Image (cartoon, rainbow, N blue to C red):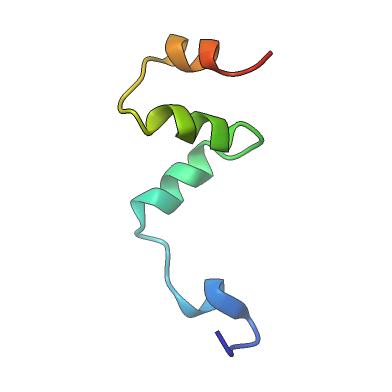
Length: 53
């Protein structure tokens, strides 16, 4: 991490499934959606009901 460009430049994340998932569901709901998915696969309607508003 002594690299001036930091962690991102020092590792290739292009093949990481988690990075891809985070890019797909990016935005303000990301953490709330991930919290719901910790329990396992959920239907879209369940996720939609679980989010506020």
